[in-house]
Image (cartoon, rainbow, N blue to C red; front, side, top):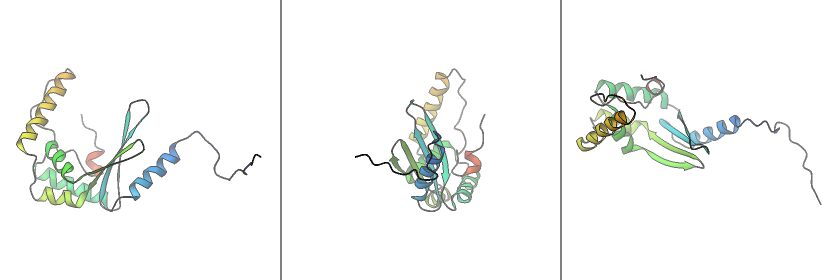
Length: 159
């Protein structure tokens, strides 16, 4: 016996994964507390990846404030890596890797003067030098600026 369920309005297949993707991203975001920055990496079947940035309630202005304080204190990308890793939580949902950064503790670390340890800072410099050589570029002295926890810095294009 075959049962034919009646078609439900609004569920017509379109071939557009956009609405499902947006619903999934909204669900991921809703599962985190306020004042959180989320970096969500979609690992695609072709081997590529798409990175998306989103913030929970209150996260955008607090992330921008964290960035202002960090830049005023002279923090750089090595400090951003170190402080971010002190507080981040990682999880997976299917092919999505989620890194959640609670911004209030990150702000406290920035205000307290937390810095990347010298040994790790040296590792970051060596990595940047190796990457420059690998891509045929001239290594640039120093370490780039703080990368960002808020939308203003994260959305800024760098040369």
